[in-house]
Image (cartoon, rainbow, N blue to C red; front, side, top):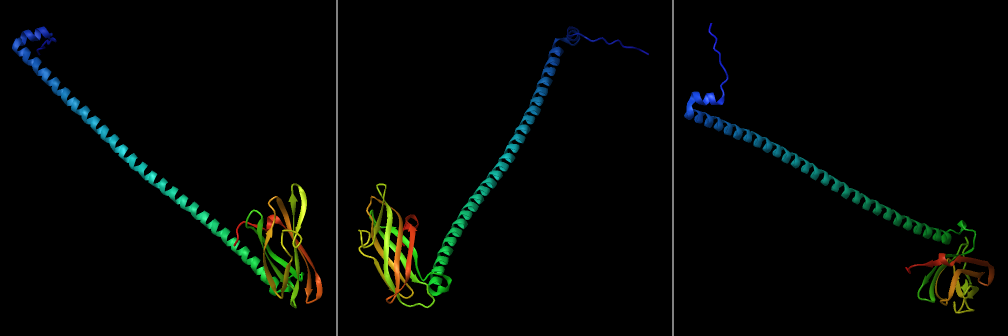
Length: 243
């Protein structure tokens, strides 16, 4: 067997063996190979970066689409909530109006029951629906209804006295119909079932009314049947709008 002793050549020894021409050619080949490898490596890195950028762009697109979908859903929920709120308010308002209408109907029904069904009340004479409306600084419109609540109705008559109790400069005073500027005379009435009253009251601006009271002696023809009195707080009788 033969053994070849191969020593690693140095650059100078390799140059001496190959010669200057071959050495230059070898160096050129090595450099060309390195340039090719570098270019290929750069392509690989560039392709990797492109894929990374594309993946990022796709991720951004997916996230943007999801964000748009969520935004749309949130907007839809806000609109639905607003509509539900408006619907609730509408239902509440409608319910309130229906309650007011029901109360008005019940009050009207109660009034007519007292007129046509006197056995449901103990009084023989009654005043209902007292309302006061302010027309100007010192004039008011007074509305009320007189009714008879006896089972056997006959024509009754009489004179209704009106008085306004209040204060002027901290001092109590009473304005009476027929005796002051409140009303020129008492209200005359004559009816079988009921009678509506609508008169204008004059109350000076510096007077603060506290209550309005009514009193009368009821007669059936010329026979005295009894007395009737009622007082209503002014703030309860005072209404905002004239109907």
